Length: 109
Image 1 (spheres, rainbow, N blue to C red):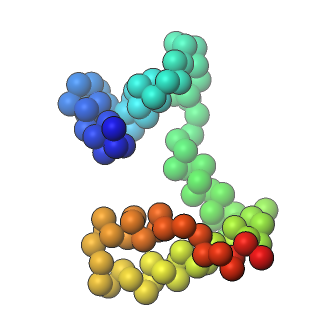
Image 2: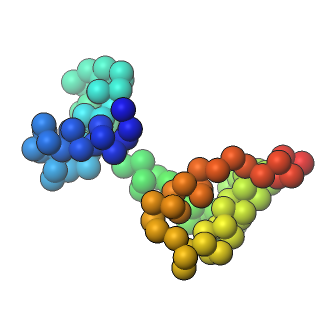
């Protein structure tokens, strides 16, 4: 099942997930085999959301701290360039497809 289909099913079946990304994400994890105990769900509830953690990492790295490896930085730069070149002419759905393309072989050097 595609992620979109899973999220839609959760939103349809669990009304509280419509109001809370945390509820949605916990339910998503449960349905995908995480089998979180009540205690683990409570701990997750009190953590920052994954997107918040990712954004903080990104901001720190933009400021020159705790940089990724050269290979990962080159891949990110390449994807950024690809998006800049394609954004005016593609739909959001196509942007995701473009970003999911395999890494460029010469970036492995």
